[in-house]
Length: 80
Image (cartoon, rainbow, N blue to C red; front, side, top):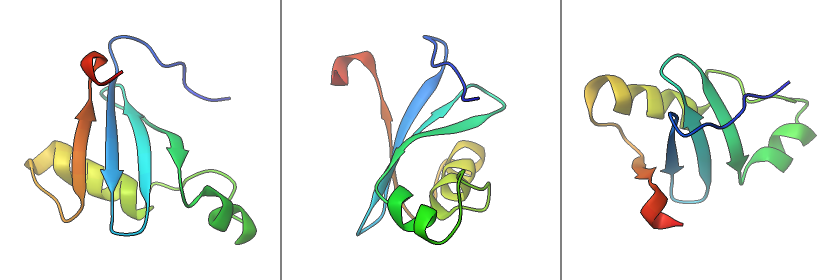
């Protein structure tokens, strides 16, 4: 069962050169809303995004240290 997206969550777009992921973060949990690699992961037998996924681990670094290797942008209401 997935996490319910609420107004208190922060939503990020984490982009690499070839793919991107939309990840919701509520202060303690991460939920991948969409990822361009989902089909490749499912073909490899990975059903749910693991915490060691490149996009999730880079978002953790960004939240903890303020910088990371990939491009991270917070999505706000104004972006809709």
